[in-house]
Amino acid sequence: MKKILMAMVVAAGAFLLSAEMPRSEWHAKVGDCAQDPNMLKATISQLSSADKTAFLAEVNAAIDKMPGSTDVKAAKFLAANRAAVAGAGAADRADVLAEVYATVPPEALTIINEEFAKNEFARPATMTDDEYTNIVAQTMTKITQRTASAESGAVRAGFAGLMFIRAADGAADATTEAVVSALPSDVQGEAKSSWFPSALAGNPSYDSILAPAQAGDEPNPQVVVDITPSQKVDSMLGDLQSGRSDPGSSPGTGVPGASNSASASGPQNDSLSGAPRDRVQDTESPYYKGKNRGSQEPGTYQWQNI
Picture 1 (cartoon, rainbow, N blue to C red):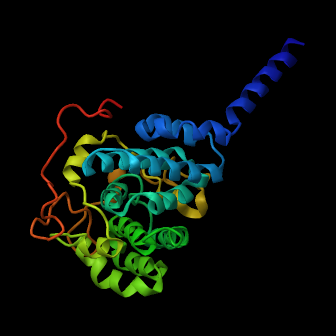
Picture 2 (cartoon, rainbow, N blue to C red):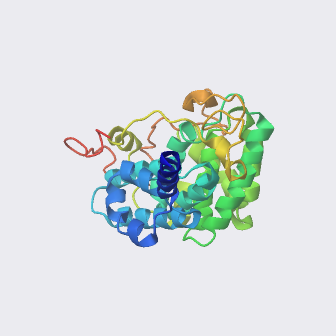
Picture 3 (tube, helix red, strand yellow):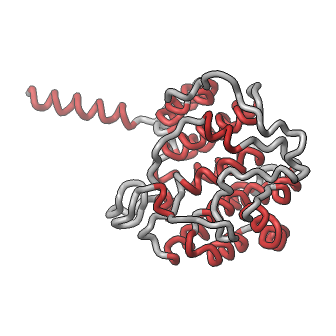
C-alpha cells in the first residue's frame, strides 16, 4: 500500500512539474521577466509552444517601452532574448528564434546577430558544410515567414541571415546563397550587393540594412557587451534542424559527437565570410555621427551579478 501511495505521489509531482503555465499567470510575469533574464528563462520553459512566442513578443514590447539609453535597452534585449532561446527547449527553439528577429527593434539586432553567431548559434566544428547550409535554409524559411508580418520584415530576416553568414566559417559562400534565396525577392539583390558586404566588411557598417527600416540610434556594441552578463553558452544550432535535437547528439548541438564550445565555429576574418566586426566602429559614417556612441552608463549595472 505504501508503495502504491508513493507511486501516486511521484506521479502527481511529475504532472505538476510538466503542467503548462496558464496565460493569466505568465502574462502577469511579463514585466518582471523583462527585467530578470533568469526568471524569463524559467518561465518560458513552462509554457506551451504557442505561448512561448506570444510571451517573448510581450517581453520585447515591454523592454521597448522602458526608459533608458539605447545601450541599456540593447543590453536588456540581448539578455532577455538570450534567456528565451536557452529556455525554449529544442522542439521550440527555431520558432522562438524567429520571434526574436520579428520582435526586437532592428537597431538592437545589430548586437544580437553578432552575439548569437559567436555563442548560441555558433557552428560546431564537426558539422559539415552541407549540414550547416541545410539548417540555415530551413531556419531562414521559418524566420522569413514569421517576419513577413512584422514591420520592416525583410530587414529583420536580413539580420538573421547575417547571423548565419557570420557563423558559417568555410561555408560562407553557400550560406550566403541560401540566405539570399530565403529573403523576399524584392530585397535579394540589395542584400547580396550591399547589406551583407557592408555589415561584414573589415570596417563594417549597418547603414544600408538599417536605412529601409528607419531604425533608431544604433547601440554602442562595446558598451552593450560590457553591461550584459557574460556567460559560457553551448551552441544550440543543431536544435534548429526540424526544431529538435537528434536523440544521439551531444547536448546543445544536435550533431552526434559535436563540440559544445561556442568558439567551435573557428576563426573568422574580415571578408564576406566575415565574422563579427569585433566592435569596430565606423566613426566616419553619417549614421554614427551625433549618436553619443562613446558614452557608457555609470555605476554598477543591475544584471552584472546574474
